[in-house]
Image (tube, rainbow over all chains, first blue to last red; front, side, top):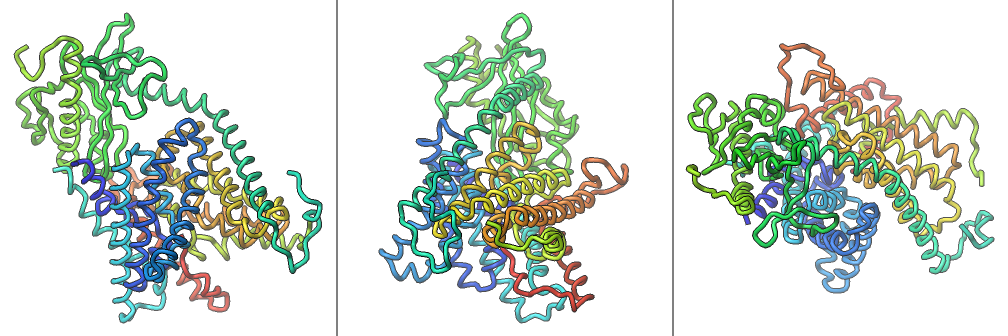
Length: 191
Length: 227
Length: 218
């Protein structure tokens, strides 16, 4: 239990996927200018992460035991097809949910946070529950970073930023300060 | 790659939909070739990678358990530590390494353990001398502790030297530098107390699991300082 | 199969554009994950840059030579399989040759697969051009990427450790600016470099680039 809690808090805050591991930076910079979009993309990614954790555990346990060299290729193929499948399933089952998340799903396939999650979970030898908790923590951390960044960027729109730093430069500097703040979570679990 | 002749000519702009057989066939050929290449590189590099893994493991055990010349993997089954023969170990089964000196006398065990550090999970290996009943060496295998502070857990030789003759019973304790009074205490690193305490916590947790097993196997008593 | 003009001028331009004018990191802001994650030392940056060079050049050469046999509908999947194969090859090669550095780069070697610079060059260039031009284009982009990684990795190592490629530069009395080799340093140093590029471009407005290129991608 202690271990599961540490896995969650580590992926969520202390070693935030975006701010400490630099995973999922494309949506972090690309989609983080509106709060509403940030929340939805975060939720959709968390959902896909949970499914990826399940699939990668199944692959590692039942398929790739004697063929570790096929891991990368099968992960990629499985993630891409899972996202496709989830997209179709949501479209059929809940048009409302599809309207909210649908357009983000294809975007998520190329999100390195998803493949990163599968690879990290494999390298650390996580079991099924550990993997799922890790996915939940990583997804929550991704959503949190995205939402915080969106909040900052919405505020920044009304500020008089110098033309020189407008765009990616100021976003990176803001992310740096956010990442600095997240370093304060270190030591949360070792006292 | 055998293809329909039509594909050798550049197709006109208004191209008709290729049959799904062809789509599947293309993917199959791509997947097959890719698998072939991956397997070849795996087989070519496998001996080097395995040799490196075995050698670095042997050297790590040697550093935490001095005088080791050969190692043997052990698992805990039916109340005893048993030597693992090739391919006998289950995938998730926890194991430790026994170290032997040049006369094939068993010196003790090298135990790998991990747990939460200041920044991220710390993985370490420590050696337990079964005759002296002392921890005789510790090495950090993997950590992301802060450079200049927390990374002293493996860069500060004074700190590492704490683990050269450490009594693990009843429990290891970290004390402020210079205030060490008993043989189960270590001097914490100034400015990196949390990382030092994390190491102690990881070793204590692992000891609670493995020391009773080691003592059960070798017929010693444990938990008491007097025997 | 030759559909494009491959005059030497054109070829030189395809090569040089990726290095500077369309630098994948500093100008197009692509491939951010590896750019920030592995640049805490110049050595890691160099190995990552070389691995990406191998994968990108290899994939571009292969994709441009088999492009006529791949149906349009499955092309992206085929590119991804090709890229993943090259990544697996370099992953095992590095593990066998430089195991220590491989351990430090860890999960970021397999993550080369989702580096959008690579898939981007396949879709935008290699799928439409000759092998010769595609290889030049890929080499240009990879050298531009390598250059960016080295700049970032070198700067962060100098500031954060006071060394370059592990060689101590300033002697005993230098107090390292540790935060620069930690994650926040990655964001801050890259932010400052982009600031410098903006300033550089603002000085020469007639050469300013298409603003559409300014949106970042992973």
